[in-house]
Image (cartoon, rainbow, N blue to C red; front, side, top):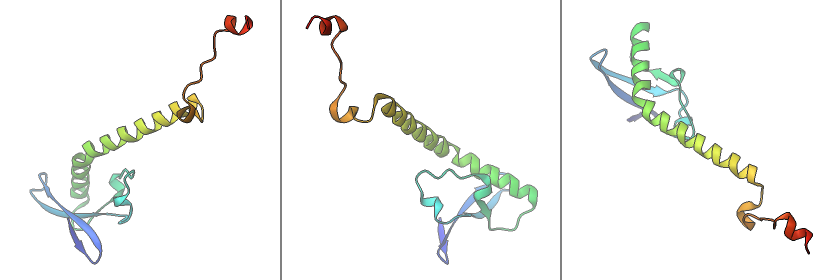
Length: 110
């Protein structure tokens, strides 16, 4: 990772092209957001390449990022599932705990 004029750019040692290629993210601020999931369209290649080479390098970059992206998707899905489960239980269940009513027969006998 290198910086130049406040832009951060990266170098990938492309196995397809057998050389180093410089690239950066299109949005220099989003790259620091924890929940941002980049796509191929977010990759800006700095070096001059043919359209075919560009496609190869972008695919190679996305392939390298895939484990991290998969982990982020799983983390976000887990967080969303926990939120939905909390909403199903009710808004104050964490504060008061589960309130269990006595069986109907016990309430009728009183």
